[in-house]
Image 1 (cartoon, rainbow, N blue to C red):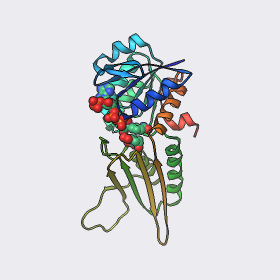
Image 2: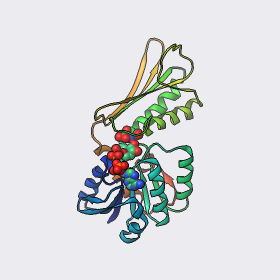
Image 3: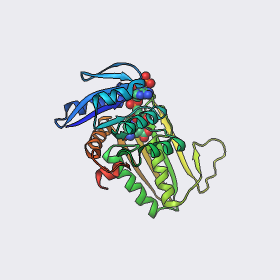
Image 4: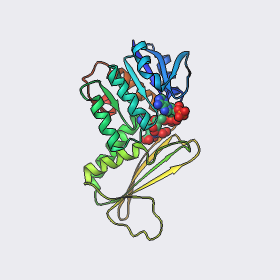
Length: 252
Ligand SMILES: NC(=O)C1=CN([C@@H]2O[C@H](COP(=O)(O)OP(=O)(O)OC[C@H]3O[C@@H](n4cnc5c(N)ncnc54)[C@H](OP(=O)(O)O)[C@@H]3O)[C@@H](O)[C@H]2O)C=CC1
Ligand SMILES: O=C(O)C1=N[C@H](C(=O)O)C[C@H](O)C1
């Protein structure tokens, strides 16, 4: 049995993950952490200030964190202090926060950290890398669209796309939206849409002369991210204490 605590338990992702863990025959949902007290599929959800005591009491194998960046950093440190493996889906980390996370985790606990836990997006990233290798002289525009409540922009997935493009093409200037005079140079355009209940759309356009290639992914339900996070939780327990990503979990 893999014993799981979810932080961000009362949020959109936390409740989706809670349902999947609760229904999994090989997993046990032992509770949640959130800003407020509550319940998640019959288990106790306690305020974040109580995380250390809660992890000591419940002794989970894994903490799955889908919160906000500043909160996630503290939750990750608490999991590492209490020898609990980690799945981190939270996005919007600053470079400094990433460094703090790396030093809390490396050599202490295994952690799968990914800006997107869907299988499709992990394949999509591979396709973007392949296209960038072949089409580096085409104009590149990255677009993402999410629901009206999303707190960070560009999305974590879009930032991962930009990292892949930088790795393949060298670091290029990013232009975030365009207004006024727009003669294009050797930059990458980045465009963010927020509205309604859009679950998560990402696309990369490679525009050449007389042709374009557009690689895109659309998520229809948060269950796709939640299933990936639960798959990663099964995989991470007992691994060497370091940071992994979803490509490691999928063997890509
Ligand atoms: N990697 C992936 O595949 C995916 C990543 N995400 C990311 O996951 C994160 C959460 O998204 P979503 O579920 O939509 O957001 P929600 O706002 O619906 O959920 C986040 C929850 O975390 C709570 N929270 C805030 N601070 C803490 C804390 N210190 N400890 C515990 N819980 C806390 C929030 O409480 P309150 O509302 O009261 O502040 C809220 O209930 C975002 O960063 C998003 O980008 C989302 C989908 C997929
Ligand atoms: O906040 C969301 O909803 C999502 N966040 C992730 C991101 O920032 O890339 C993943 C997914 O697109 C949904």
